Length: 298
Ligand SMILES: [Zn+2]
Image 1 (cartoon, rainbow, N blue to C red):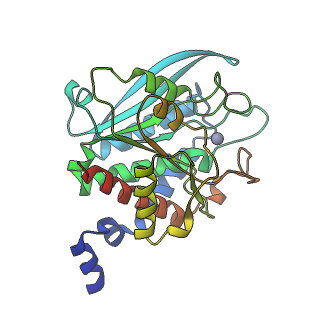
Image 2 (cartoon, rainbow, N blue to C red):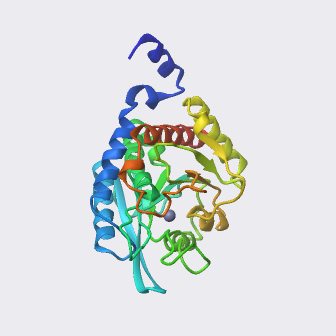
């Protein structure tokens, strides 16, 4: 660390970018590779169960407690057992789940079901799970008071089991989670969803209907991290796991890579080779910076 870097830390602007870069992206890539090594992980599969166990183990090692939120749905593929993972920081005991939290950080664990091809969903969305683990680790280590204000949620069943997401297929975990938030507990003030954030040609496109304060938090964080050219706003809205939470009254931003007109999306080409540690690093630093701003504000 040079004198100039120390001055930046002293200014309080970018505490992690100086101390950690570029190790955050590399560490998240290692986590992502461990998920991909377990193979395709559609809802109800043994591979997804193994991924869940691995994610919970890694979060526990970083000081977070987690629980599975299980439910069943009748689908075109028969009855499927789903399980979201929720994680909180700040000790065990049942009261850790009762207290209100200020923010959510979410990603989806499942890969889309294809019966005729090997699809591992490297950027859709194993990379977001890898990034989430690294964000959880850094928050716990460097900002434990902020970690206590957060809930991390890993959704099952984001992908439709057949074709595109519809009102009846896909977003299973986020729909269930949104409907199960207890009415007597204050809802979070904001949520950030990560999806397709590790592509080597990183081009994040926030949905056009993102609430203004969240759009501002993410875009200004991108500017501060020198990553403004990788972040923009899409021409339209996007249907993703943030949608049920938005409808439930939680303001959400989907930090999502541009998947329009991309040949790799939902094909076997969405594999390890399209990922980049540098892209993951950018997405993690911008998310941490945005969280820092959002969690500081009263
Ligand atoms: Zn997908």
